[in-house]
Length: 112
Length: 112
Image (cartoon, rainbow over all chains, first blue to last red; front, side, top):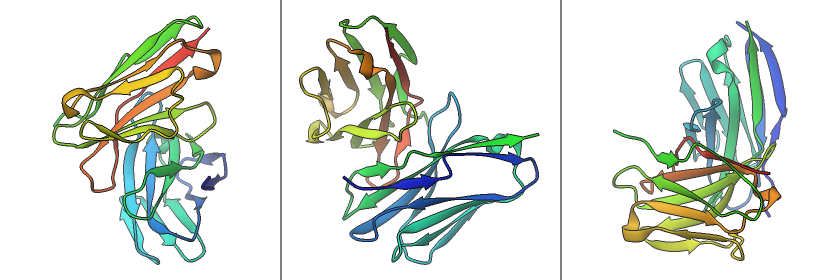
């Protein structure tokens, strides 16, 4: 059983503040690390698919980094807005095109 | 382009009753997934299809769960009989084999 852990489990952040959270995953047999955002009553939406050690990806105010040697990825949100409130899921993909193993998610609530 | 469509969005049944969920993937996506997300957990893979072939059903509880993907397009997931522990969100996703998954909004099942 693969161990994909996310921390913290939940987070409350004041609007305008920046925040970050962590995904840890096995450092062996790495293929890709996925980040999804899941807003209540909507479908999970892909944010990033990261494959290269040291990679950093950015989409608007959200960015992510990847360290495959030590098995962690950080997701950063700059200047949080109410619409950022969601559950952020990471998923580890091993080998080649194997199934995704999801973490339990970080539930982010932005306080206006 | 239409996304992944799932129905029903919500279903409440009594234990021992049957239930079925339907998924229409994005056109042209050969890979289809059914995931189950229990409260406080990350999504867990139940079954993965490549066209009409189930290539990974190792996590599907075969005593009560069944799935089919006729003609390699739409898919149904059935539970018969349902148990209290089956209460969860059932997510369908499809992929064009790029590794990125496109999810539907999910079917939330409550078993009383």
